[in-house]
Each structure stands twice: as structure tokens, then as C-alpha cells.
Image (cartoon, rainbow, N blue to C red; front, side, top):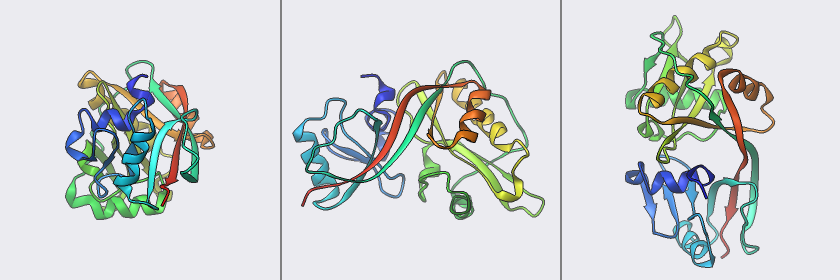
Length: 226
């Protein structure tokens, strides 16, 4: 199995090990960093047992794996979010001085923007996972952003690409993706992203930038047996 087939696991056992909690059989991001959990590439009954211990009986875990990944019958699937994993097929990064770097002091505004635009999971410490760039309007309000989330060795995932309704149709999402990709490519890594299968507009934008679908993916919320 390649790293991208199990990106959360390979991020937490590699470049982002400082953000993990769990054991050699089941891991998750610290809960104020990200919502995702992960199992090894070959996950047997002992790994699922370790995940149950990690989240507690009756607790939930959000797994990020290819559609074909098996889930034991004893675990209840409460949510399935089908999506695509896309990778850059050529260098796409471009510098863009219009964006500002975002950090801990911007988190409240970032969370508010995420609440308005719903790009996907974003926690109070997600900003610590990598570079985040944003755009402010004439009043100084944060109206667009994008950044880096999972980092399995050799890759970095672009995430939280979002634009407030007041700033849409200005090409900000494409510019942000290119600006974030520039930093990723400068490290010798390949940009990767995940997008919902029904978000056809975003998929078209990413394809126009040079991303291609690698595999179907899904985020699965599972509840541990009691």
C-alpha cells in the first residue's frame, strides 16, 4: 500500500508524529488539532481493538481511507462522505504577494470563516500543521484562506480552501491553491488534496490547475462497539 492510500497514518507515523496520540496499532491527531484517526496499512482485529480503546467503547472515529477499505461488522458506520483524492501532475505553484500568513492570533477569524463556508473539518490548532495564507477585504475582515494539513512523507495535503460569499468569483481559491502549492513544491513534495465527489465546481477548478484524480476516497465516521 502506498502512503497516499493511508495518508493519516503515514502523516502521524512520519512528519507529523508530534501531533499524534495512540499506539502502534491505532493513532489519531490530538483532538484540538484535527478530527482524523487512522489504522495501519494492514489493519487486523488487534488494530480495531486498539482503536476502540483509543476512542473508548461507544466513541467515534473519523477514518480517511479508500472506498474499498473494510470495516468490521461490530463497528457502526454513522457517516460516509464520498470523495476523490487528487494529486498535482506537474508543478503548479505561483507566488502571490496579495495573501497574508495566518497564525495563532488569527484562529478565531479562521474558525468563523470555516463556520460560514463549511470547507471541512478545522480545529483550533489545525493552523499548526503547516502554512496558512489568507486574504482580507478593505475592512480587514478575513474572506478567503487555504493551507496545509496532512503530510505523509513526500506529499502535503492542501486543505481549508474557502472563500466568503462576499469575495467569490474573483479567482481567490485558485490563487490560494497555487500560493500554497508553491511552498509545498519548494520542499520537493507533491501537492495532494481531497474533495467531495459531488463538489463538481471545485473538481473542475482543481483539474484546470493541473490536479488529476488518483483514487476514490471517503471519510467514514465509525462508532466503536460497547
